[in-house]
Length: 221
Length: 240
Image (tube, rainbow over all chains, first blue to last red; front, side):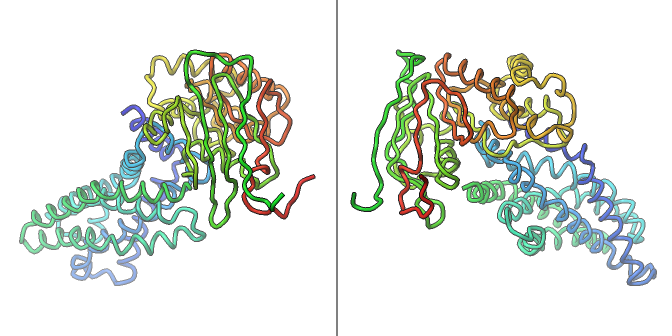
């Protein structure tokens, strides 16, 4: 347990100190959302219609942006050897790193999403649903992304390989996340969508650490 | 001699520091290692009893790092077995990993952390309690003369200081098996002496150490093995 907390705290500390990760992700998120009204025009009707989708797609790309660093730095500097030899099973080490990644990226994304919702003129009633959907859905993004990050370790254009591996797997969280907001705008109630989103995150929690750990073992050989 | 087949030699190193009683031996039987298509070495056997040291030599690419990574369980061997305290390591891999320290080529030092934080993290990774750990932490920093830089960010450290930090891990959490890959690289004379002293006291307390090095390092009564002896394929780069 001490090892789990130690790894989680170190990753979080590094994310805070290097500052890049969280700042970069949030900056990208805001910019990506801001670009859409400039491209499709400022008509409120259009923006309201596609707003939730814009915010979700931007959040997804922003989360992806920081994923290539999840294992890469430790892989390059030999730290991954030490993690593999530690008292912590590799599956739990992956979980600790994903948890730190989520706190450093997914959580801030969910927290600033209400401001971006205002920017795309989202129905005020749906703003809380948007934040909630991001809060529930972003753990799945970190966990699924960890599999891609582990599989693409050592690849020459890691960022590109990672995107191609991971983006297709992000379709389900995207559909149900954006769907939750749409449903609440349409007055249908977002509960079912949010529950499915939670199920996706839980399934990712159960499956992804194993897959990532297996990929990491492969990379370490 | 009929070609360059695997030679099989079992050797024992005799060290005056060997303690008897505890059967804490590291035993390799017929180890082989494959990297991709290439069999790097084969038929390698040794027995290291408490207090004994093994010095690996051999040209670049002869498999020193591969052997250390096999011993560290980071690479599964292509053949042969490893025993720790007479138990095959597969039987309790967690216990074996807890018993070993591996210091590889790379230091694993993060530029954003201080040496003290780095060391505390490494100690935490091994699952040691915090109370004992903080005591050993200062001892470890002292053993490699890192007290003055203990609270600087590691990005300010020189290559030698980073190396010393990686080596301080050995002292920060005691473990009976030390696997050191080129531990003297980037070290100055004084630091190398500190490392040699650390190895001496480790062996005196019954630990074993396997060192790969091609720079001279003073390890008294160490068994020396050249990995070229165990090369499994005809090697083009013959060494005189």
